[in-house]
Length: 102
Image 1 (spheres, rainbow, N blue to C red):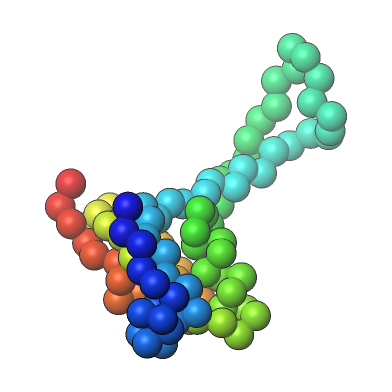
Image 2 (cartoon, rainbow, N blue to C red):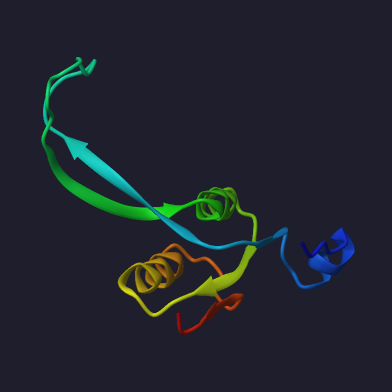
């Protein structure tokens, strides 16, 4: 674990710096009603990818006017590309994310 003093992160111009492994949440749309009953099968009609984990924190902080730097590894797969694109669309800093071969 790497711990940076607050003053060092502030010198870089960010309110918060997150060292992490970025993840994608898959939001499922389900047909039917709640609550789900035992032995009743429900059909999922679609999955929608959204930034998950610390991405949620960075997005919320950004919407509140703060700044963040997400650092960590990404691959070259579909979900890694999705995260890079979505973070940039939302105005998040992506220079701390490093793409590596897996």
